[in-house]
Length: 280
Image (cartoon, rainbow, N blue to C red; front, side, top):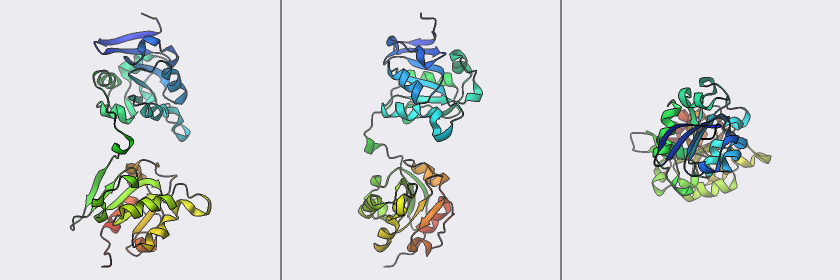
């Protein structure tokens, strides 16, 4: 056994190996082993592991860092459909892979890891075992919608969260959709195709000439009430972040007429949009 890797558990599917550094990955780990490393799980360590792509990987979150760079490898691995998770850096001794396995506490994870049953707050050794024993799904991009109903009013209308307006359905003509794409011209085209009762999307960081919210006026002309959230406050591509973290940056006149206001949390604005009385 290579001195740079410590075997923590073995099964017919592979091993859980503890590594002090992501640079200690070996060809034999490819497609078989879960690697628990004492490296941060940013893009650079993910590239090192990519050389001999393992079954799954765990690293530390490095305090997240600017733009989430210290754990951005989670999304790198997600694009490859490889389960990956980060442990809270304050729960481990840096540079000691065995300690990460024995004492790490999961702080972040990607969708393939969630498929395997990994959850935030779980001990790293339990997460590693789940990723060894289980396989993630392999859904198409249009199957990962993260659709959730957050609220329903007395009329049966719902506040529905999903990651993109392109995941809207015919049923959403009765619903308020909270999504996480921009509200520019192309976003408005998709909104008009779905024709939700109301919507909250991202302003995309506004853009030149406020082009990231140009769809508010376009949709208003079609009788659809809507608003945008500040992209600096809510993650684009993550509808749940729009709902939970979003603060309104703009709204069209139809939304304003039912009490929606700039600076309002999305949770409150979505209910106002839901209860709006549409003209017959």
